[in-house]
Figure (tube, rainbow, N blue to C red):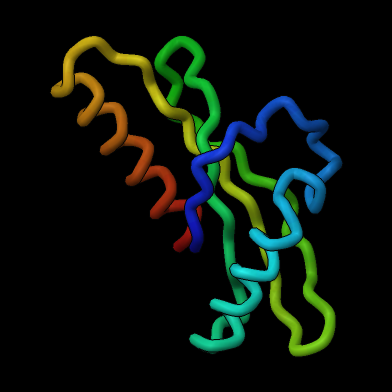
Length: 102
C-alpha cells in the first residue's frame, strides 16, 4: 500500500489510471516487484460526509508483464474540532480498511 496525500475525488469514477500520475503508478509497481507482491494499493483522502467512515474502493486493475493487481482506496478524512474526536473517527476508518484488505 502506498498513501498519496492528493485530492483525487473530483475525477470520474471510471478514470482509474488518470487519477494518479504515471510516477505514482510506477512507484507502486516498483514496490510490488521488489517486495514481491501480487497485490498493491494506492490510498488517498476523500471528504467525509455526515461522519461516515465508508471507504471508497475501486475495481481491481490487472498489471501486465510480471502480473498483479492494483486497487485504490479513498479514505474519508474528518474535519473534527477536537483531536479525540478525530482519533476515534480515524480508528474506525483504519479498522474498516483492515477488514477490506483481509
